[in-house]
Image 1 (cartoon, rainbow, N blue to C red):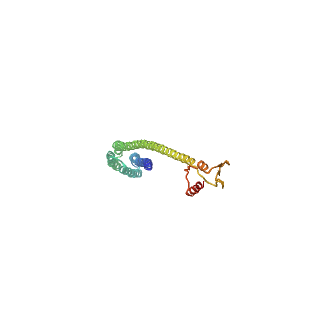
Image 2: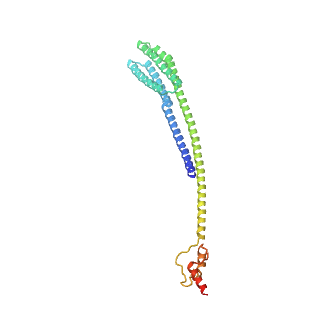
Image 3: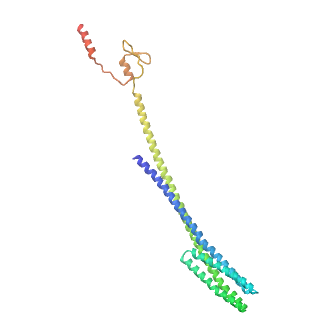
Length: 286
């Protein structure tokens, strides 16, 4: 029964620390996933939105260069920059489309993409006006409708950035909450493990002390019994004539007294047949 209780106690400690390990690993795994999600989704979307906004601003500046160009070559160089930058914006929007989370975020991305697509006809109109020689109207459209469209586009991209950062903040808050919960559970399991370990150690120590006391008691009783037992051993000096025995002090004792003093034996006197017959013969002679 005692062995069973000890086994169950140690099994309980193992289960507590095993639970502690599982909870800790699971918590770390969750925090790791949240970190990856923050990096791969909100932060990626936020960075892509900022890069797209910078490219839009670069395109708008290049369109200004187009309307202010003094030669066809300058116009072509500026339009080339616009086209290359446009491809970069679409790449950033594709990244946002792949990584943005939530229906609201997807809706904002679609609105931003459509707004960016709608800007191209305005730019094409400016180019056509320049080619037809109506530079003044091209400048007015670029400064007016074009600039207003770019402002709306930049606002929409800023909305994407804010949405992504809000998502990142939400993930961070969730991660902090999970971390706080993990710390509490870890503390609870650690305290429980230490508490049960102390209890088991106290019980085991108490049982050990009781067992030790029992052994000492048994040893004392055994020693007492051995002390009480008197044995005869070794060479005993005995007189060849009177059969007295010499003790350790040199005194001679009759054999009955010596044996009584050195053992637990007691004497009960009787007469053997030989001595009986001999004694009877002596009595008859008398």
